[in-house]
Amino acid sequence: LSLTGTTTYRAGPRNLLIHCPSPDHADRNPSCLVDLQSGRTKCLSCGFWLTDAVALYRSLCALPTMTNALEALEAASRRGDRGHLIMGSAPGGLVSRNIPGVPTVVAQWTYRELDGATAFLVKRTQNRLMDGSWYVEPGSVKPFKAYRPYWPDGTTRGLPAIYTQGTRLRPLLDVRAIADAPASTPVFVVEGEPAAQALTSSGILATTSYGGAQAPRLTDWSPLAGREVVIWPDNDDAGESFADGVIKCLRNLNPLPSIELVDVLSMKLPPKGDAVEWLQTQGAQ
Image (cartoon, rainbow, N blue to C red; front, side, top):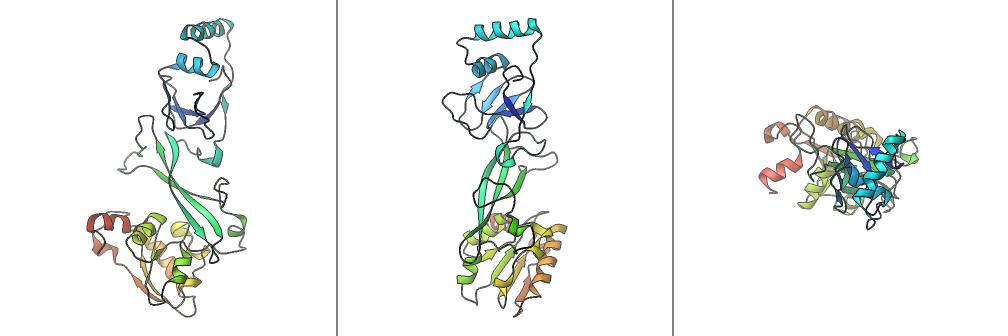
């Protein structure tokens, strides 16, 4: 990689990420993992596979045979060529932590203003390993995941400036559905987009605020004024903090909504469990 001047991206302690060298793959986002110990290379997008460092060098240099690749590497060794490893920043900022695997978008949610204009996107990423599995952090049983906001264009990472500089409060997820629903329909407020999506898919009017337990105060809760609101937090300390923050915001609305808090302890949910786990174990009733 150093000899060929290939731009690389960190993908954990044992791997680098490069643009796929296959001539049949226009790899705009780096999706090809290189094992630093064995030289094995695999594109997690198109499946392109190389067995070792010599094969990788041949592919990067477009050499006709493995013999040509070996001869070129031997000549470079005799000359003492070392090259320089070029480290880049992956498009969209996906490669940002020293975590193994290729960050892969597995879900996306669109936050909109009441008029339907896209406010921002939230993408969920998981890190895919060379064997096709998802990276799981030590001590966990679930794949590592990260939630990141993007501008409406889907490529610029972060929240638009109007939501970070105090110009405008963030909209609730699916705020238009809340506005269009009968005033008598209860609105479930959950912590996180997957939980809101799970309830919505079960026919329940549900929403969430972007940013989790630390950000209820940055959200526009006015569409819930005068509504019946059921808060369903995650089963952990952060969930309790989220519920407290939402309640404080709701109590500032006029007219006041009616507020009910789901007793997650009585639901026998696992630690950090939410509506997703409950629906999986109990089913939508």
